[in-house]
Length: 497
Image 1 (tube, rainbow, N blue to C red):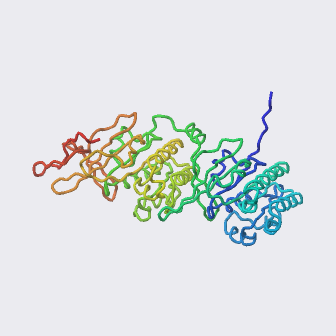
Image 2: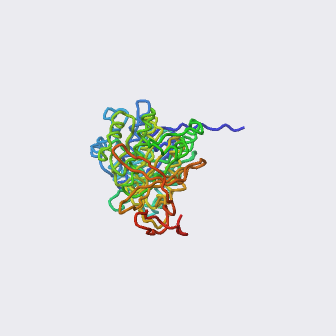
Image 3: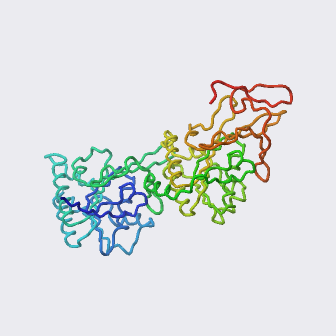
């Protein structure tokens, strides 16, 4: 019977990166951090080093033909992760520029061996390793000496029980095959400019011995360093579902008469879409939903893309935010991704133990995303709704619709099937006046009203009135003018819906 060798995994100190790696960084592994200039390779290396280095786990950082350590530290100390007390104690910097210029790879390797033997580090960083590629381009071939160098370095670091990182500028995955073959882990950083947005993405192309999260993960470089926005794991969703409320529980909407139309309120844990034209009261309904939760002792989160609560003049929402009953996600960055927004929402949900979430609105949400993320907005929206449902919260989303009276639509994103309940708001013309009407189109696995109800909006919020006497074709079809004084409704259209 064979016994498995246990591999210790190190916490990198980079939010989201451990999840993308599949649980952390394997100790004693030989890793490559690669990507084009300016994508954050050195920042990522320093952030991991300052998180991992200690008196019991010292680190050596070698620089090769790149910026000198003093210049590099001048900029890296601007990040919150930087700890000057670790310099020359738990962390030591060594400049290999003269060795690389004078003796090439052999002298560089010998200098690394001498420094490692003297300081016995647990972490070793070589930056920029791309310089080694240029130094290895001899007449015998561009990669022959490099491959031998990398193999020797990898063997030595493993025997010394050091976790090693080679940082290098590579533009394509085929730039240095020998390096990629020898490495145990390969972290590839990418960046691109799209319109006015800088989009950065990270991929774990290789990590021996563990299952990593596949695909590209967006990340941001901020004052705290790098944050990776990895998708929410299935285990976390399953854990949340295990603590979900019992079936049959329903939430009050905060609008008199609407709970009855929904069949007793909105089932807890459902997602609802409120669709309607501009000015129909979608945000007011969403605010009432959150305010009702506060009255019932529940906390909530609002992702405000339509307008900031301060500018909406909704004193109730402002007071809820100030009292800690409501968390606000209000990012105005031009390079947002779905995963970043989702993690911000989930962070607020966990901080407040919130049970209600509002996204207002999907239309402005899409505009807030970087252009590259708008192409797959529908798929990303499905991921967002699924993740929030996995956390056991009840979600209300608003969606802007053009009221054309010619077709029956609930969302321009085809998002109707993603949600468990749908409320549609419309305008109708009566005696040269616009009136508002609403209908509950869908409440999954629940009986609900099929009435078209007129409603008004005043200082107290939404007031739902009586059922309309003539419901023919109101939600779809072509407008047909009737007798003077009658409502201008729509005749059925076979193409609707």
